Length: 409
Image (cartoon, rainbow, N blue to C red; front, top):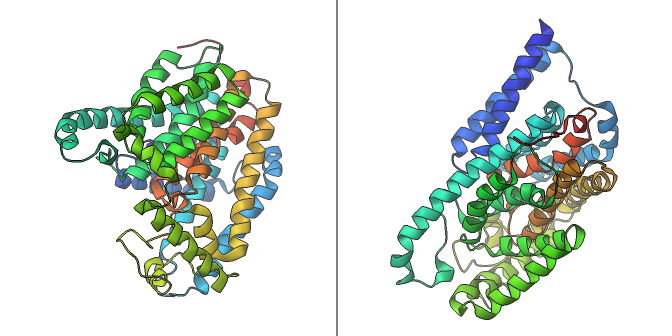
């Protein structure tokens, strides 16, 4: 009876987890409902079975990582106890629940096929959304180009452009390396390519410059690590595009290095204020609450967007949780990154190794783009991110790699 209950509830947890991850770009409400359902089922399962099943060897490897998670949680709570604006300081602490996506993926995904299904359910849904966006973009383009420059035409139909761009970026890199291996997969490479092309194009057309930087660095690193032919081709395409594309299509990219650009100068101002916030509250931070009001005590915002947050993951963590929170944050993601690197180097199966490389690129692209945006505070982005960085941990569990496919479907 208990075994059947666990089997059924485990399947339900994975179904709702898949819905939460795959549909977060389309409907936050649906994703949140799915999140609440699998969390509730998991709690009921724990109460009924009276234990949590886990891979003891893997969680011993994760000991330091888990310690940093606990320390980060403590730093977040302390920052709110000593918040500059105590009223409502604890209201957005619930976003810490998103960490459970990382852990439930490791606990409940017990075979390779389930892992692949969730990864590609996410890719498939985002690809459909991207295809719809590209159709809408093409229908509106002729009218918009007559009114505004190309660099100002942004895909933002289903979500905020920075949010959707970051979700597409990390989703793209989770499967991109699979295109370059010889082994056959559960999903044919031609179908993978068909799914990621609209995803990639719509990502570029969000005109999100932080994502441009994340993609550029990740492509370079992929070429250096895994495929020198790709590296040479990528560099050649970038040079040709820069030479032959009209200025109207490259202005958005060239503005990345322009410190006088309005968006860039605003970011520099916010980063300066963020450091001042940290200097004034080095141990507890200001707490992630009423940021705009606190910002206005340091500087008068020159636009509606300025000061809502600091447009930088690292300065935001430093300013809101102080040095203890920043150390825990850095230690947490450094631990994950080192685990990814370790498993990439020691993996003997090329499909597993390539999926781990994809997860490494997910981490790199996220942290690079996070220099210019508060993506760690974005519920939708973190929903997908926490799942994708769990992939090497899932593959490290006993029995998962042994179920790798030997034929395509």
